[in-house]
Length: 324
Image 1: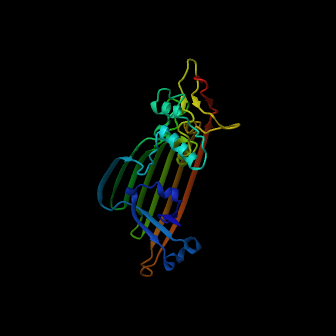
Image 2: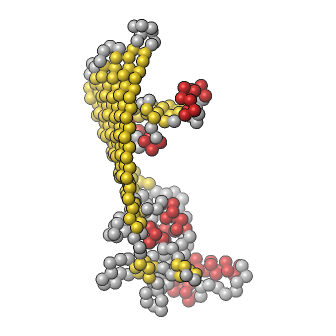
């Protein structure tokens, strides 16, 4: 159970809240602490409180700008095509097969790179993924207040990109691009010495673009791809309006999977927005009994999400007799 300023939110909402906005973060795990939340608190309760203004304080402006570089730390190193063919033949011999699959001529031609479209040597990982990606984040907030009213406002921007390396001049740009915006507005007004109204609003807007496959699925296709069966694509010819993706029969009636084509054949875009507002009235009844108080809270949450995807049938080509 996740509570933000006494209002339940989802884990997705929590993930998009900037750190600058959070005043406190508490996790309740023991039975006595979670008892008041009933069965909803059986697995623990997260209580998150956002910042608010301070009385009789000049406006304080905070600015955070970040540019980060992210790089996978454990990427496997693949052997070149000629070494792969040699090891494949050795594996066949170890199993008792006397006839190797690849001839020495094929291995030598693959190593020489003299005819890369006839004797391909494809490093699928280097072709499809970048070594690192760059992300940006910015946050601007203002905090202050007077005798009766206090305020805190925050605007956050995030741009996250992935390591997928798709050509931008294709029918659609399949590079991963995530944009998100978060706006927090907390206003507190003291009507009387014992009555306070708190108004809080959180707005989250986001846009995500990229392949209609997860990055893990794309990487799985790289891990099982053969580096010497076919090139990722053939050179374009005059009048072409499509990419000539490479492929070949791997067994009777079945073609292989071209990871490069798999990355580019489907596109997805997702747009979402969340508006979470609450108004709370706090009344202190200490004039009746010391420590007695009451709180009335009204919450309204509006959430919408839309997405669409585009899929395109690709053209495959195969090298035969020195042509394709």
